[in-house]
Length: 515
Ligand code: KIV
Ligand code: ZN
Image (cartoon, rainbow, N blue to C red; front, top):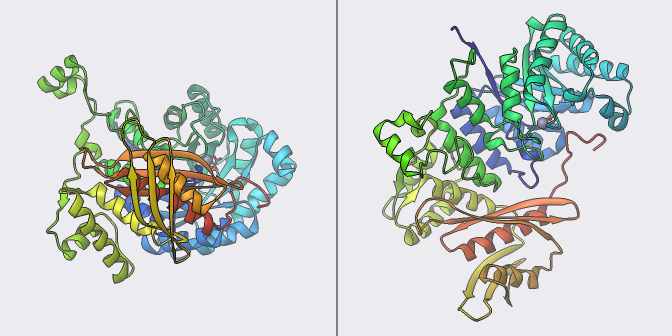
């Protein structure tokens, strides 16, 4: 069967960043963009340029850096957004503007307060303006799943005539059912004039757990671009997960008439990087990238796999990048070896100063932990980056005491705006005591939304990577910290979250009008 190309459009840096608290710094976005390029994604949606000057700057830098993937910015269908997106992608070797407007009755009436005629007019104007910046323009009909078919046909016909090259049909609210979603693609492709001149794209959310199934049903009915994210990150329940789409198409090549250009061995490294940076752990039983995805527990399965792997395995762990993370560095490794390995992982430092800071932390870690793996290096770089957020609070020392039958206590010294301040507290456990001690000083009035600890590597000498999600006045931030001592890691993560809250800059949300 001759195969057509399935375009992989990754939106981890845009829709993925809309997950509560998953916002990333510019450096973190660049690290992820480099890994996505290595993975071989065709289009990287690097952000929403009009959201804030920081988002604009990150997209522009990614556009300057990435050479092997198209770099895209999202834009609402209005002049200001489209111009910002156009300016942000200007340096790209290959740049795309992705403009969208809602087309469902509920969104047009209740959110946009626009008539269908006005929506068509605005969509056409936005596409024409976008074409002044690039030939590669994508149009999305937000909430297409709840839009009326004849109206979708009308909008799509108009934007194709205006110059859109990719037509994206989003299930914005995760409402679709696979066979109906596939049917919708077949109807659109049949009914929209000039449908053969564009690439049809699907963008599915996972509210009912069917984002991947819906995307694949669209592919079976003519979609040739899938919008997805690493680990299925994204608004609310997330987006279709890139790794599941790619491996489904590859493993069931007997069913899907398409192929991707993804280097599947880069999937697990990409998953780990995104999880480390966003603080969203991957559930152990997650398909393809979960820690148990290739672990056979039952005796019957183990016996079968030992006799003949394919008795129970449909994919090879090494083909998706498991076990490729070799032991990299140790106590005796020098600065050059450290820099070289980080470079291989796609991490470069913008100054000798940051390299030195990272190397000092590496030496510190190597004193506590004899074997240092790639995951440790990723966490270490995130830790160094976290310490570069303006730091109102810094941890100087921490001592925690717990003993059976006694109330755990923690005492610590913080530097607050340059001034050393001691604090102590009791808690229900040593972590609780440490965070309470911090609060006696910070008095932040923030609500703790999530606390999670993840072992970065296997073994009891693993670093614990802690994520703390805090909410204050509607802002949600994630702080992270890693250390071989999980109480220290917890304190670092909590302070990181407080520092981010303190330095927080307002950003617009693409799907809220007027912000
Ligand atoms: O879910 C959605 O509708 C979106 C659009 C902006 C494509 O993310
Ligand atoms: Zn979306």
